[in-house]
Image (cartoon, rainbow, N blue to C red; front, side, top):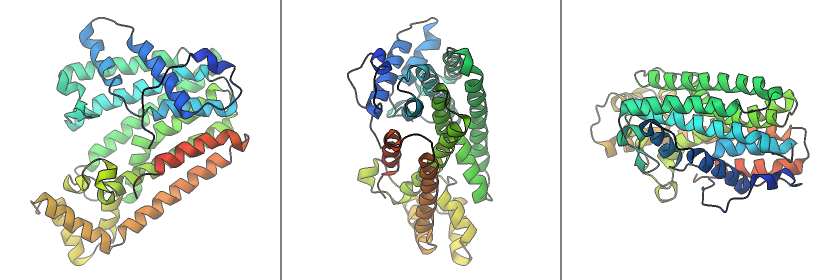
Length: 345
């Protein structure tokens, strides 16, 4: 994973004449600069806007806007046209986090109080709504020749993210979720925004539709691989490296690739153990995690998860490799994708 650090900001104009590919670090510098400008526009009432600036100040890896700039850079040395849409993607993403935290009743985001915890639910809802509108205003600063295409991608993706969140909420009360349903949910909730970021960047460079769609599929498959890997790491990661306690998904009965695949394969006493865990008949959290993990191991679930991760990762790279630009221009996206998937497993 690529950590966000504080960089010395470079004027955006410098990238207009640059004849080489723009690094991830440079993309992050541009996004950080634009976010600082965005946050400096102090507006009133402060109760509406301060939560917006707060959530945007909590950090995050800024991977989605960086992908938009890097995708644009595949086809153009000038990424300036993609800057506002990239910023829109980041504002929209953070808007979804504000509302997700309310729905999940989550007290902490990025080691800081969530917006609804720091203020209240009403403030968080309204400020989140404002962020969504701000995202559209940023998109609408694009030139007329590409605006409709950008809005089509953005509108479709925004609605899909909402669909994914609803599916995720539905799954919380269902014990019969199929693997196909789960893959569709994580595609909508996680993958499509990564995919759209890449496609939006390509559209900003006025790349052919066929090439923009290849980048979309690259992002979609990479997002699926990333989420399944996240499921795997929650159970099997080295705690010191992963940075959080393992087994949280099991303790919370969260529907993951591992649990759904286990429910599909388990019989007899293994099926009973899983059902007892899901029905909260195993009251000790550590015991519950240990018993469910044992079932996973006996059913070879870790190997099946890794195989699925590799399958989606390979599909992603095939789409990226098929993009018709010089291979040297794709290397930075290759490197970023490899880093995203190079976590502790």
